[in-house]
Image (cartoon, rainbow over all chains, first blue to last red; front, side, top):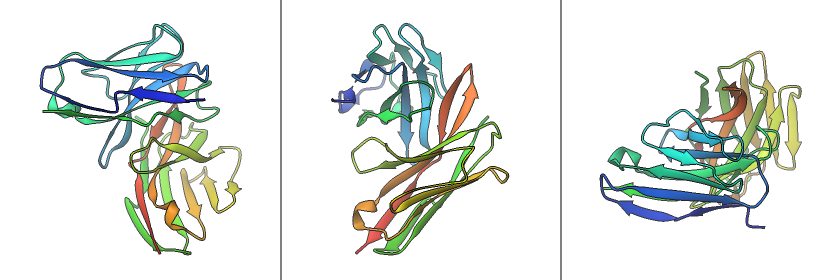
Length: 113
Length: 114
């Protein structure tokens, strides 16, 4: 049972480039989330999804887009990367709201130069 | 909006001592309070949680207490070991947009020295 898998683990982008981060979970969880982690600021919610085909904005959605075409996958896109998007990105999933806690992936370290 | 404050940001203890991390939250409707442990290079892992109808919960060397009136909750680790060294995050549930989500504190870096 792999849990939550994120790809890639590391990436360096130039300003203005685009990329997609992939999150896959094999636990049949309904809810999926994308967080960014920055020093001294904890984990901030970017976007989330409450089921296949749904997406919603979190605390810091600007500059990001997401898609949930399949229940097991949640994609995070950066259309035009900026240095301010340098961060560690974590995907998480849960069965239903917060009842069972979140399962996190191991993260993607993104650097935008 | 909902805010979770966590203190201290860093904590250094000797092996065998106790460690306490404290969090306060702003939304009185919050009803779920998990704690996560993040080891270097890994994602956060749930270690213990508490719901608003319970005042304290223990799991071996780890305990969490909740004071709903004061809107604060704490993580207590007794008999600390070097493998407890990690970043710890508290979180509180927030209901918005029709769903519950977690709002995280900024984290506490715990160092346990042998």
